[in-house]
Length: 221
Image (cartoon, rainbow, N blue to C red; front, side):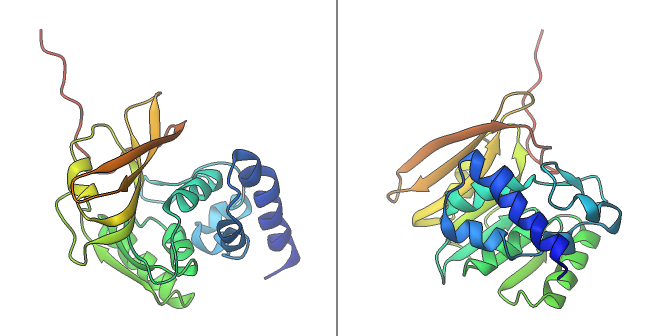
């Protein structure tokens, strides 16, 4: 890869991700080596490392790099972990999870995007990622339990949260974004026992909701 891309990755780490509290050396190393420009549409390649969300081409957006950094840090994936990603998008986060050593099942509700991401990940030799077409909020996923679950879009309500967290191993971690604009909260849920969970609020952010995510009930008059 050319020197300009290497410099852009270095600057992304030093100017965006580290200052925002992502200090995990393994996460920084992975985000400093995975070629993000390979996962963005050609029209946005020059902005691959900018501190913005980038359109995927089907109405969805890639998470900003610093949000990805916090996601990876919160999930604390170790080699051999089983990870579930809901919302494959371009495949970038799945690639990072795989490079951290996880065996990833990634669900994408859009058939065309699922096919494109699977082809891209295969071409780039991220062999530990299995992309499936499907709705990750429709019910438990074959392959559970998981050591890590990443939900890439926001969920306006917590209706799906019990189903998601029940797919965690003991000690497993779930990263998700809850609420509606402008007050959305990134949280990490850790399963600490068969029926016990610990919830940590990480930061506030604004991210588009997942397709088919349950909507808040409307006001009644």
